[in-house]
Image (cartoon, rainbow, N blue to C red):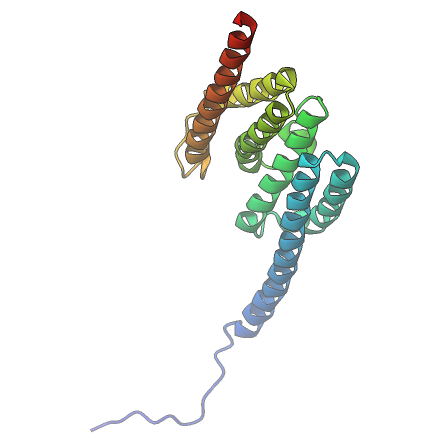
Length: 204
């Protein structure tokens, strides 16, 4: 009866060494991207905090820091698209909020150099930050400015209403649309309440 003997192992020469080198390089690149990602998210978060504190100068410093790291990782956009989408969304949101507070035109996705998905989700996330600014305006007694921020919220939401795509095409978009709609209804209720109180005071 025959049996298998190991004998001397012969190398297969199927390119494993080459694959190993390629994957090691990719792993190093991913580590670099993830480090930059953390720095970008932190910078954008700090920028939004500075915006709400009306320290626009500091907010722009943070955004410059984010842009420096974005420049570093953009070359890996095709290799690690999922890892870049979130940070580009955070950056887009911060830039959109900055434009709103400065009373400037909202930049397009082309001007921000971000992808469509990151841009659209960043726009919807900005609705919550605009709501926060609206509430802060009301707290200061500035109804005119509060109406401006509410108008921006509605404008952003209405502009995106025609977009009807599955989650496979626009991940998280429909959920963020629902959240945005709820935020707008809450803000509308707050504004109406303030207006009613103002009318009552006039009547007295």
